[in-house]
Structures are given as C-alpha cells and as structure tokens.
Image (cartoon, rainbow, N blue to C red):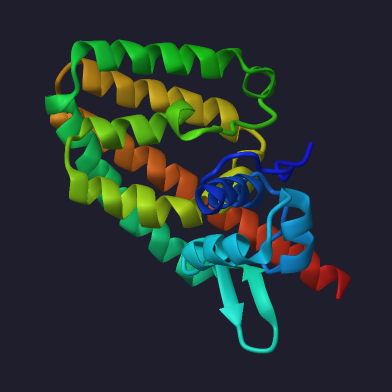
Length: 230
C-alpha cells in the first residue's frame, strides 16, 4: 500500500515531508530512482510549491538534486555507507552510555514493552525481516532521546538516521538478521536496566557493527549479482 495519498493538513510542507520520508524509507522508491514532482504533487493532492519545499528539506538526507536531471533518491556507494555506519557506531555507543545513566525506570519499562511488541510482529517472529516503523516505535530513537543530549540527538535523528533508514530496510531482510537484531536489542536493554554504561555502550557498538557487516554484505551481494547478469 502506498504511503502517498492526498493531504488534508494545513501544514502542507510538514505533512508532505513526513509522507515522503515514509515512502522513501519504506522502499516505495529505489536508491537512485528519479522522482517526478508532477506525479508526487498529484498523489499527495497538493500544488508543486509545498512539494518542492518538502523535497528541498530532504536534499542531503534522502534525495539529491542534479541540474537538468532533477531529484533522485540518494544512492550510497560501499565506502560512503561504511563511513556512515562507523559514525553511527561512535554516536550511538555514546547515546547508550548516557542513556544507562539518565533514562528513567519508566522509560526503560516502555523500551522493554516496545521490544515485546517487536517480537510479536509476524515478520520478526518468522525471521523474514525486522523493520521499525514510526519514530515512536523505533528502539534506537528511544535510546537517543533517553540520553538527554540535544546535540547528539540532532546529529543522529536529523542527519545520520535519515540516510541509514534506506539501508536498514534492505539489510534487515537478510537471513538470520531479524532474530539476531532482536537479541542484540535485548542485550542493550539489559545494559540500560543494570545502569551499567560500559555494558550498554559495548552492546550497542556490537549491534551497530553487526548491522554494518550485514549492510555491506547486502551491497556486495547486489553488486555480484549485477555483474553476473551484465
């Protein structure tokens, strides 16, 4: 089902931005795919003015604009993706460390409930995929917010995460990755609940490294398959 349908909100740019993020990160558009402003405006039921402003906000995050070509979904090469994951490991490791010290008991309980809901999702239970949806249902978002560091939150939520959400969708479907990721999340939670910053940071770094290996393996497999059919 498409995430693109007419907008009724008065905040057209904000609403268009949110819907485009969901459509792109859910895989409705492929990396490198050109986006038609006219078609998007029709799907969203808005004029091209608010749409262009929403796309402008996405530039450098999820889309790139090329003269005489237009707007395309961002596509990362292997080196760029690896660099992003290395930055994410450092930043999220720190976020987990701070969250172990600063998250409230209630927030930890809500995080445990969130993982229980994730575990009950059919795709996760069957091992097909582990795709986290809205921001308030994302395990990593909750930890970053629990770190109580606005600058760290801005770096991760407004910059790094937008770009990596594209790859999370693909790498989460690799065989065995869904259950492994859920287990790694539970280990991170255990570090938070024990108020052990070292344990929480170590578990988070291990988790991000595993995600990096999975993402790079996915890229390598895609390139290999493409080369064989060329």
